[in-house]
Length: 121
Length: 113
Image 1 (cartoon, rainbow over the protein chains, first blue to last red):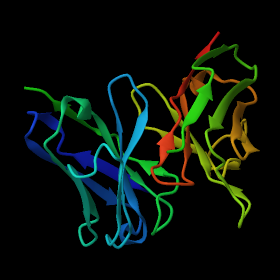
Image 2: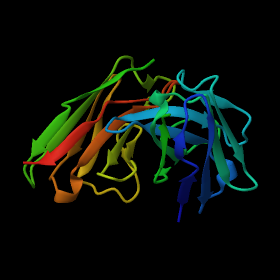
Image 3: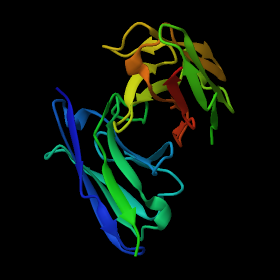
């Protein structure tokens, strides 16, 4: 059974930093691209970033590029999102989602329960 | 960027009746070389994470009840629930994966009338 568990969310001050983690099990983690999708309170889904299975290529939304860094440790079956200089607009539930292809962000067939990030002073 | 516009924003349907949700893309998501539409549908129940229903516009994910179906091509797509059940109350999203950045529709809230 596929299991995806995010952690690391919480309250962070604007201009600070925070790293989210996503521990995966039940599938060959190193064979699939992985993605972060966020959802602001009461709002819809917004794609944030994707990393290919090997970790060699990353994709970012304009809102994340230059501030967020996605990475993965295939030996630990763990995905990360380092958030640098977050803003109030980054307040959201951050979901980790499994892709179906190793190289490109396609659809997402498994999602974690999400971790809430609140950016406020 | 590909903009996906769903209609309606909210919908109330009686139990056992048909529910239809439309998704219109600002650009075609049909890839001519393989004749596939790069569009997926998700269901998000209150307090839960999204769940994949449909990919390639019309392929049902394993385990999804057959009352859920997807149709359409190019820029216009539809998610149909043939006979609404109480457990189908949720927000439904379409998503395109034809081009980066991946984008989602704004969501359609489905309720029981």
